[in-house]
Amino acid sequence: MIAIGCDHAGVEMKKALMQALSEKGFELKDLGTDGEPCDYPVIAESVCNEVLSGACDKGILICGTGIGMSMAANKIKGIRAALCTDSFSTRFTRLHNDANVMCLGARTLGCGLAAELAEIFVTTGFEGGRHQRRIDLIADLENK
Image 1 (tube, one colour):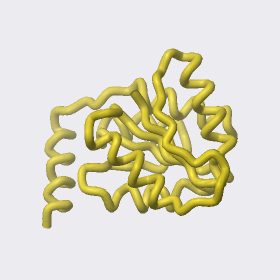
Image 2 (cartoon, helix red, strand yellow):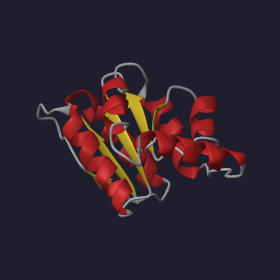
Image 3 (spheres, rainbow, N blue to C red):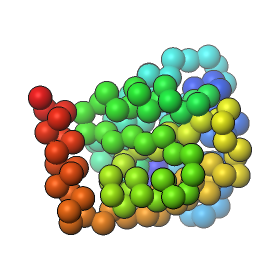
């Protein structure tokens, strides 16, 4: 299951992603918003908590640029959120960084590209190996 949430700037993109991913057989948990103004850190926390609890495998966060969501999500211990803007970076943030949350900008990406990036994110695995050592070093930074 994939947790997905947005602030008021990302409602249309969230709807488009939910439709595209559902059509591909992915199960999604919608954590808002549906249009009412909200504070993006609250949505980021909700989505990240679903990922950390194990209720959802990955998370997708959407705001105007994706920057605010990524900043908020990365404050949560255990979250490795990546602002995704192209297919190469999206693929490698999963392969090498084991990112568990992707962030997207509704005002900087079209819905078609966002759907392609989301599919790459949720279907690409983590390579492990030497990259795990680096993930462990990131976790050490969190614990200082």
